[in-house]
Length: 193
Image 1 (cartoon, rainbow, N blue to C red):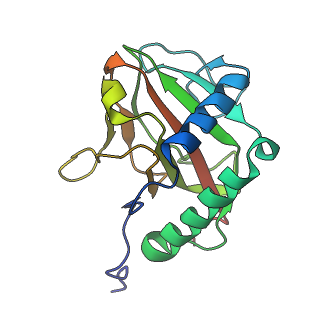
Image 2 (image 1 turned 180 degrees about the vertical axis):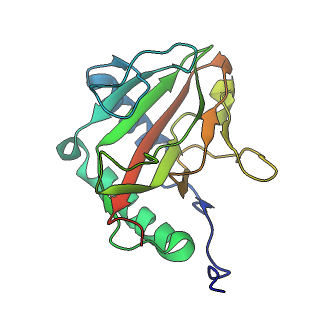
């Protein structure tokens, strides 16, 4: 029987923050400069829809050319996380970064970031990432939770990233006070073998 190497994991925090508080504020400012959208639920623009029972948040998309150094930092960190934890082949950035703002009452219920049937891919989404841009003292609730054994939410510092397998079900719990701001990205590669 073939088994996965013991070093493999489907969830990985960065050791420390990728971005300083000032860099986080710069990303927030850039996110606010982009056209805001009410977040949809679904796999493609044609089939996505608004569903306030599933997701209540505002998003915007940060163009690659607007913050090239941010993208380089994230890509380096993703490649390191992939090498140390996931071991997927040919990983690349597949989409622009999504700036996400969860006001009081905002949330995103249980979901996966990858298509189960892979109809709309390649590249296949394999790794997802979330960076906490807010200082944790600025909001309560809004925990990023994973449907894994123990289901203990990671305690992220401002500017810290968590990388996880895009097939893991996860959610952002309802924000009880303040505003939670994050940066979300996806990374993909060739089909699973």
